[in-house]
Image (cartoon, rainbow, N blue to C red; front, side, top):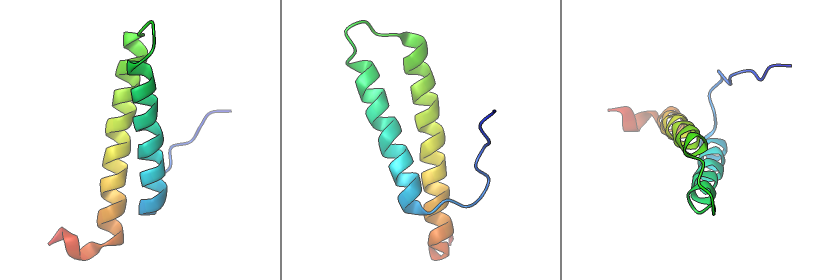
Length: 67
């Protein structure tokens, strides 16, 4: 079964949890005794995407900030 991309609007708390988890994953990969550059690159790409989702969730939750 393939994972489906979440297309609904995320709540800021869910998006923040997603971002925090990926940030911790990046930190763990950077501290690994034998770094895997491909895994580190993929983790940072995922972290960038999570940051975009967090920003979108925050702006959707607080529409006044868009002005």
